[in-house]
Image 1 (cartoon, helix red, strand yellow):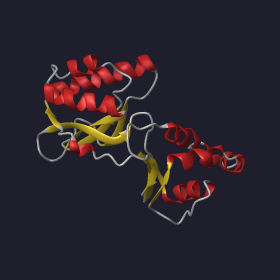
Image 2 (tube, rainbow, N blue to C red):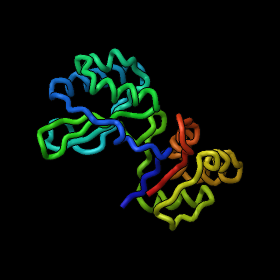
Image 3 (cartoon, rainbow, N blue to C red):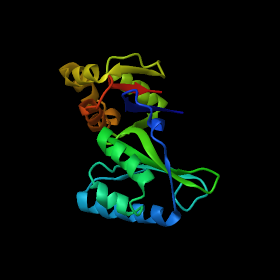
Length: 193
């Protein structure tokens, strides 16, 4: 089992209708993302399940660092895709691409922030992270406001506790990225489940 930490602002990504894309458009998107990953030096593709050659797959992608025109060109500037891309860039979110057992490939809005990746860790490490932050490590689900996370991460005692644990210090950059996220609306918080 694992615990997944992520920034949540309460926005439901399904309020934006996902678009169906073709296999050729998917290939063009992946080429663009790989090329821009090398150019920018940041991972733009975040794998979730399987690879695009599998019958069923999913991944999310960072599109905020890219121009809307360059990404929408992969889809021949299809209005349904542009709506998803514009909303992703406006709200600072990733896009999500998936295919279930059906044949359609979908492109929609992700629930994850573009600037702060979700962090999935084994249960015992998740509990240890919560305890290092001064929270109850036995709570497998919960949330704290990002303001509170920032306060805790800047507390010298908590920072020292995390820094002294070799297995946990590797998660500190991601927690700091999450704490820096600014959202368009809502009360953002760090959620875990």
